[in-house]
Length: 351
Image (cartoon, rainbow, N blue to C red; front, side, top):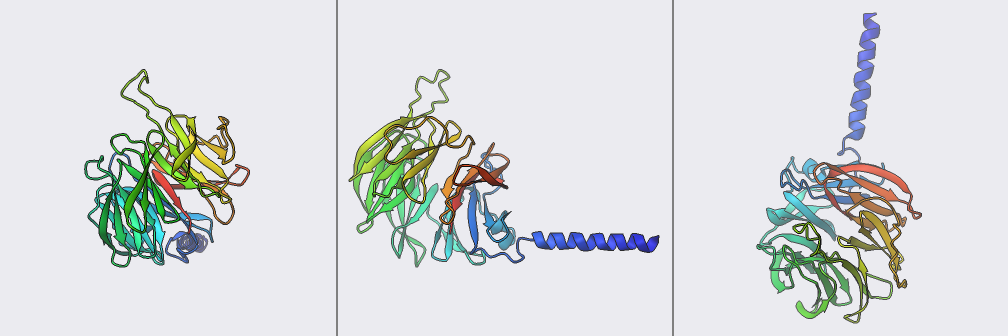
């Protein structure tokens, strides 16, 4: 009886050890074959931002990969976004304000870029330069920091309108959506990559937050409008808008519900997707009217298309206090996978 009991215990230990080893993120994990997801961290300012990794080989999520590979070192509070440039990852953190440079192969920290104030997004604009949008120390004085990639140093500051957010490159021009930061703004700033100077300012809707380029080269801008929560009657609310820019001119614009965000475009670059009224909506680039019928009735706060499969990936931050979710939809909008993420996921980054 004792021998049987001991055999059961030994077998259980072996099974548990095998399970733990198989689930150990550091076992047989290649960061070259998967998708990164940024998690902002708690909206209360407690805790730290994290990066999750979706392992394509095993269809699983590995959470807190930066901490796992850097002796539990924290990224910092409010991780706003990241980008992959060459063989490095650039993670933008608000507190302390800096960019953490990470080796993509093993996820080890390489160093920092400091001298920033409330950084939001980074975009590689040439072989040697990247632009970083930032709100400024006061949250109102927006600017673009020009980064020299080889030396990881700031070489210039370009003033913009308030609250610069996402950027997109079209030819030698960078278009920047200016949401207003802690204030309110309604313009897209156009900057020449050749001179690092502002060449145009384009008026769009209130609080533009995201933008994409379609198959014709036109720029689409989503503005979220104003939700004045301080006025219970809602009399100061302003609706958002979806605008199309061609040749630095707004050639088409339609109203959308206030709070619209997360504009993205499919792989064929002919259909737009965004969040509004807590659901996901779509819009063909040649359609005149905006459909009020949701494409997917699911709340989320980040969208991206898988460049290989065409599947739509979404992240849901739920309450911004607890674990969020990764949702993967097939090309028909059917949910085919869901995974738990870190606190307040806000971005999806394919390689």
